[in-house]
Amino acid sequence: MKLFTLPNLLTLGNLFCGCLAVICLFTFQNQLAIEQPQHLSPKSYLVIILILLLVSLVFDLLDGMVARAMKINSDIGIQLDSLADMVTFGFVPGIMMLILLNQIFPLSNSGELKVVVDIPWLPFLGLFITLFSALRLAKFNVDTEQSTYFKGLATPANTILIFSLFWIQNQNGFIISKELDLYFLIGITILSCYLLIANIPLFSFKFKGLAWKDNHFKYVFVIICILSLILFQMNAVPFIILLYIITSIIFRKKIINVA
Image (tube, rainbow, N blue to C red; front, side):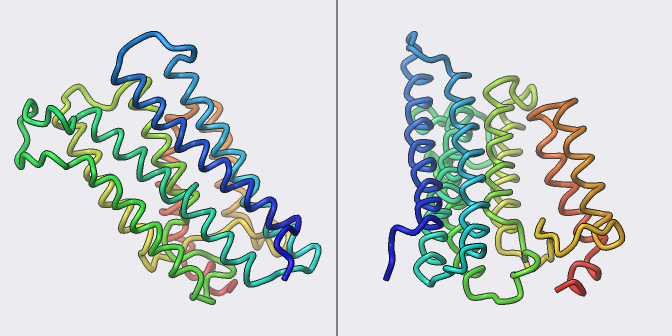
């Protein structure tokens, strides 16, 4: 049994970046809590986390491609991939949401907000994203129908969504009222958990050919994504995820028939 194959090393690279992202998140949170000048600004940590997630995405994309190209697919590689994704695209978004909720509804000072239900441990609700990511990954491993399309939102896409909200909140904030921000984040958390395990067919970017006829909606989607990111940067990500889901629902029959 070969452990240190090139695909496995790429997967470990994904895991390593995920671990570094977790460390950066806790460091970022501690820096905000002590409110003292540090070597790196909060925005610097956000950029570092973004870079780590992008590198993780590249590793996650390459490990499968390299394994298929080298014809060295293995059961251990499949299991390792899920374990790495559980950290990078499961634990990381859960911690992000926990920090977001804690910024608005602090664990140590929860009574200041006028909310319908005063729950001191409410920020831990963010970790439900981690739990549902685990369910999503386990479901993916045993579902043979997800080889050409996804059922529910893939964990990397969900992580990008949560990170975009994390970025927006720590740059400009969401809404004027903290109470509305809190309800918004709780709603996003519930929606995220649902989308992770939903049986909604969502298209993948595995092209079987480059013909426009077979992939026109994917090409249009990519063009819209690029233009949106250029114009609105990180603010465009929630819209892109929503467009991804809507596009998949519209072309549902085509997505399933391709499979």
